[in-house]
Image (cartoon, rainbow, N blue to C red; front, side):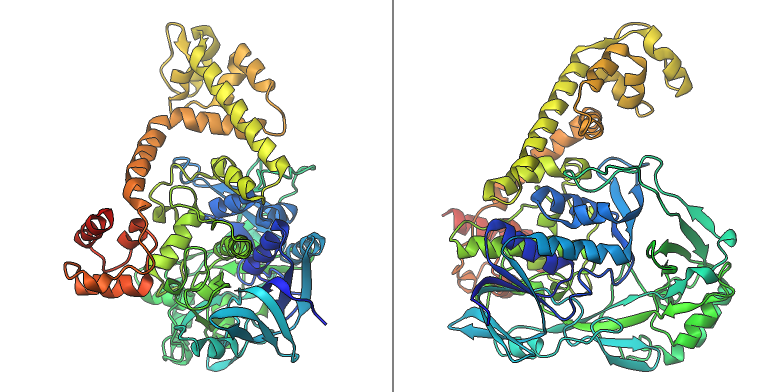
Length: 625
């Protein structure tokens, strides 16, 4: 019935979709298997893409030739650039998206990619021979051959849903769990553990009194995620809203603790520290009188609203009573309850830096199966797994990003060296080179790398080259030319920054925190003329990039210098068969951890918990010999 595929991808969430497209676009024949073809790339939690650090990841996926940014732009309900009051390393794009059309757009893309086939079924086991994966077994009784398999099962592996004292199996509410794979892989000495996550209720917008809530609008000039496909029409944006809990709400929630699966011990898995349930928040932050909630629209085609910040596994009656004490929700109607879900994951220290498993050749894990949380974190893992599955089959070098090259590199390195004991979420603070890893330069950092392996298109590459050249020309112009006092002093007075008394280089003026390039070009005719000559399709990006480079060049140079110094030992290769146990000068814990994790480089070894700087010094001496 089926031919032998190069790659089988199991699961059609964000990781699975990017993995399938990545491998297929590189030339592999791919079969994507999912339980439900009508639930592709579901936004199981909040209907949004991007956010702090996550927005940088979406930009990086797009720069590499993935589709998450393109799909997000097609279905944006609201766009905001977060953290604009901080430095550019912290600027993070975020978009509310249409939960209904988002999935449809992803399916349309999957069906347009050559070499990619879809199949609705459930994978219950793997075919493994002589330490290599060679196919999958499905619930329908099929055995489908493949040279590589990528597992992206999300929260479906032995998933169990909790609502108060009620609990039942499921991968998402209304959808069945995936049974069999965890048990199958345990036979091959894989470690399998349990994590927990949760999601808030969905409320009928017709029952909310929005006049009592605080509107939160999108940016006046909304941007987008994809560098390639530009929005052809102005974006009509929807508002989000702010609401607040109260002590009365907290008291009602506490009354439900005796039925809470979290506090009664029925949930064993550890949940996400940075996205706790509302009951966890009022317990941990008992001194707070209220907690902020973000009320987010789900779609233009439904009345549903997502109550961000009100994640709960409490009994439905308690959720209802507490919700109706929130201002604006006195008559609220819940269409889907909040719930917690426990699921199996495989500690990612069992993976190589390509996301291939150490135990089984040509078997890859990507997404929440590795202990991460978030669509963006899952999607980038899927893309990297798809790329590396293809490259491995064709005897080509692995595609691995360094920590100084992308947030994706930081994420994967963190997973395989540090492991996870709670759902992993990306933050800008996890990246030591975040001024280098800005959202504005993801294409300049990563598109050339992706183009070199054949994934990023010619169109993408030419666009990056044009942007880079235009940016360099604009910076050169700014550094060479000066502004007259009569051209800029009115602006300076308006911005409350000292006026100038003589001709001054434009580059020096841009260094002032109150002044931006857009303001200067509006006041200096020859600068405006130069800016107007930039290709309209990239003008905004070029101006932003040029200004950031001028304002923060000293910081960028310093971080690049540190990165270059660290890379001397960072990329020092450790042989796969290195005998750590023979080095008595290493601590016992270091020998144990290094033998288990098998880091590929000194840099990875240095980030393993329990491996001290003195242990690293010992390793460097022996490897250098």
